[in-house]
Length: 144
Image (cartoon, rainbow, N blue to C red; front, side, top):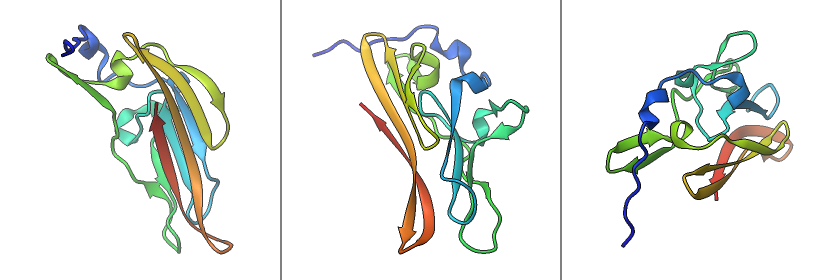
């Protein structure tokens, strides 16, 4: 049986605004069915994260539904938590400095670690079509 690990001091940086250098923008473009989102290098996103863009605006997940409805934010907060005997902690707070392996307008791949556990995170946005018509977009996050 493995002994659970305890991450001490991780809670100190919880709640800090995430700097734009620690977040990337992913986009399926603009118009009906589009998704524009800022994600942290550890997978967090949403308007509660207070991602600070270069113009100081709050960012999150902005989706434009099909039809006459204008785009709007869709997710208040999405975090990945690690739990241990001393509580739960945001992955952003306890993981080592993430490095970007590759990045495009629709995908970012990052590497980071939690103690001796190495993680590769692939985050991508993709469009859904019905024939030639875009009917939506989705964010996929894969932790390996």
